[in-house]
Image (cartoon, rainbow, N blue to C red; front, side, top):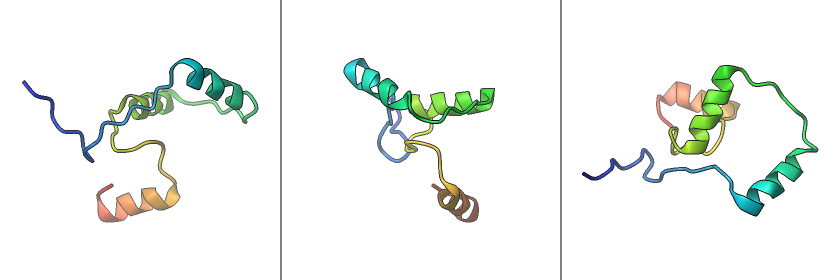
Length: 73
């Protein structure tokens, strides 16, 4: 049984491992902290594990409005 082709043709994986993860944690220590809702955490996890492929992060206002207007990514 073969897997379905991901939307957009590429499965996104945003998880970091090893030194790359440690470096990102060090860089993030100086950034402003925000509190996420449970839904926000869920969305972040889904972006990270590829469930929202081809998205690689949250959409900005212009991208969001384009999706709403055109009904597509």
